Length: 505
View 1 (cartoon, helix red, strand yellow):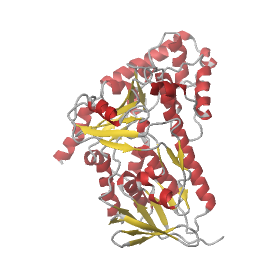
View 2 (cartoon, one colour; view 1 turned 45 degrees about the vertical axis):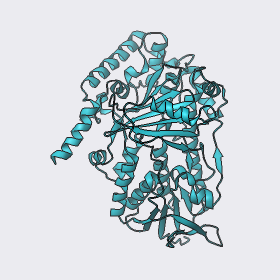
View 3 (cartoon, one colour; view 1 turned 90 degrees about the vertical axis):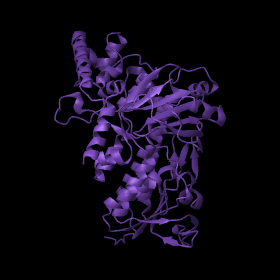
View 4 (cartoon, helix red, strand yellow; view 1 turned 30 degrees about the vertical axis):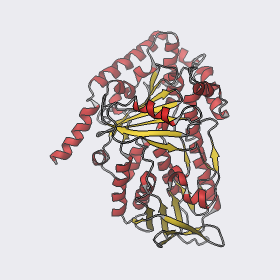
């Protein structure tokens, strides 16, 4: 067996959510066997708008053995059961993409095929009647899954969080530093490369300090200081499908309903997010500058807040796409330095988490095996592409003809991978998960159905069952869902109870 020498030091360039998630995870997994350093500057702000997550974040926190109630209190978090989409199919339309699954599977077919037969015949209500998450969203209710009720929909609640991204980074910083991560404050002035390999050897700060390392993790945000600027890894532009290139963000006072879901409201040339936290509501308007000015986008956002704004609107610029490689030589990009997809389905933090997971899977020795790097990049390409297609789906399926922007999205040609999924569903309602892609068939179903894509038929094996038996089956599930939601506490009550427990302690 060929002897291999381990790397000794990992340097993380940049803090924020990406940097401190990486530092926290590696400090837990590496158990003090490697030197971990993070360099960041307090003078450089973070994007700080990624406050909505998907359920995978719970696994990340569990691996770190973070107490969930402590996390909720520290990050001003609320709970999330899904995302409501308003005005996406047409003005006035709305549907929820809820986490979790629907109904009960028959041994021959997926549940949605049974529902589809009856719904097409006008004998079943809309899809959401069979989802505990979506029904709870409408009632502004929440509870964690009831593990002592294995046969109840209350045991199947799937959730994520809304939280203050800055507070989350601060929380993880304390976690990481307690486990040996050494933070250096300062701006990077130069990046020095090894003469023989072209790999990064060190970074030099403006104060003259030099940080050397074996593995560098680039969490420098849109600048992509190491992977993009220094190593020159090209950026793949996806704006032909996702042309959004601006966002205006502003927090406001808490107002309106304390919803256990994120809202994405489509406007004339983009969409607005609403993210309810304990202490404020996060808002932003993502738009395309080819169809709308920044002043107009800002005014639309300010006209649609729940309460008084708490800061001046902040404008962000970006380009949808990704780096051709997320790992090059001894540099791995995590977060915005590796690519950007608009936060329509709250995938930004998930892509950070995915990259961290793959860094652990492919953690290198000093030789940096090229085959390992190739596979890491292939897997990250798959993650980005599958999420990209799912986001494109929301735009392609619009029925809107009221503005030039929406007309352009409806008429655009889309990647063949997405065309194949849509045509398969149109045939007989079939949806299959491709390898380990993030979004499940239930997620694809909700967006395709919610935005008006209709299949011509359903799975023929559903006809094995008599129609009256199928009717009783669906009616029973609907009744149970209604009873379960009625028994749940409100979202506000559930969060307040967590806060009260801390105060009592």
